[in-house]
Image (cartoon, rainbow, N blue to C red; front, side, top):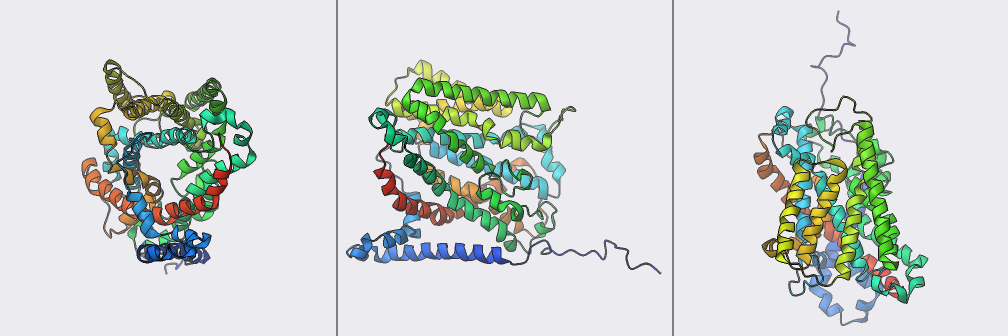
Length: 500
């Protein structure tokens, strides 16, 4: 007879939920914590909307406990996201909200496309776009992240010189207080407490809850979707070290946050020289920039790496160590710091120069050149100097729009509709990966790719819309709420600390 030990495909049955882990302590703890916070925000919102005016007449409204409670108000937090003050735009970089939104749209497009490469039943058709320029938009999607890095650098020095720890023009008045240990502790604490809660809860949700919501989805039978790296490395993500440590088991596309945090830790190396003596700051910026560029050139030359992390086109036969490309090149703060440095210098320039007169014969050709350069690096030019060129384009756009030389482009980019969308870009970035997976998981049929236009209009736009919708509530509960609480607890301490 036939041995019973023989396994045949007919008898090898797999159900959609087999790869989903059983409910464990991580699920219950995460669900409880998130449930408590969301319930608190809803309750605070109800009290805020219906009873706040009456409570304000009583001493309890002045108590810290009540102020902490009302800071979680879902009503006020959502209203603050959509609040647009069109009466006073002076001293604001109004074009950044628009850049944030379209950078976020670019990120969603790239990540959704990569998901299609893994899940679509016709991956050959997905790869077919390599024959046209569409592939360049996908492969060079990293410029969208560089835009975020650039804006982060600009706002760091722009706001520092305006109202934060290091007001450049006042450095000589109180140098000891400015460089005090207390001031720098608050400098770092503010950054960590402002960004971390929304990110931490996303890591916990993705690790312990998301798969439970996809239990009956056919996508669970996909070998790529079955990977569960988060349960191995979720704690490393919370340390902002996952772009280097346990890099091969990262579970989210959150390397950006780790690199951003690591670069923020060393920004005083540039901020302090700019505050003490600007020329010294420029020299430091140039030195770091040269080191970054030289490292980029060495890695590409030594390992014969591609100009960008691509999935199309021929491969250099001498290419080596490609398994570490992300860690050493794509996710590395040493490589990515180019645009941050340029952004910090631009932020310092905007804050120290109130006005700027530019002749039309100068700024009009510069507009054309900036747009041409940015299109060039996306479609044709790569690697060591591509981020420099991209940042130069962003620099021109930022300066011209800020000083009023943007014309109809500035009017469009400063349109008030971009303000709430720009504010939601951080939470949108956090949740867009699980949103993509949840949207695709709703289909019980095969995922099919037709062409890029159909993909963009039917998938990208819908996923982006859903992402920003849920980002409203994620931001209100886990970003704005904790930001207001941090301001209550540390705001007075920061105000008491004399700054430059």
